[in-house]
Length: 123
Image (cartoon, rainbow, N blue to C red):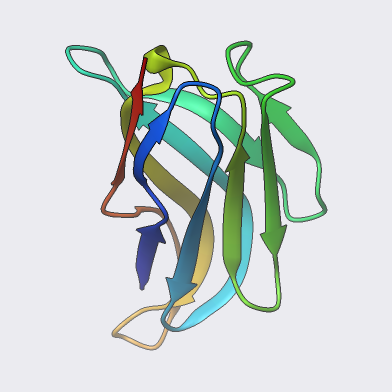
């Protein structure tokens, strides 16, 4: 199982970016999917999460500016970010709670992280 995040980059304050994350492997079911971020000198924090049936939850800092969505068929989660601020600068990580087939053929559940994608917002 692997999560691959993409879409980060350099953007000016007020601009927009769309992050994508693709899950691959012997996956049966994906429960919650989410985005977290870790800014310079800070701890990793939740940005947004979405359940398998589309219920969303946002950090206060993301409300009204970011939108999380997912495509269950493609096993992807997205984060549309707008009105970006310099304080949004961080490495953004996707996360998924999922059931998969283990090497022993048994169904297992685990929490997976993508490799992170850097978002830099210039003032």
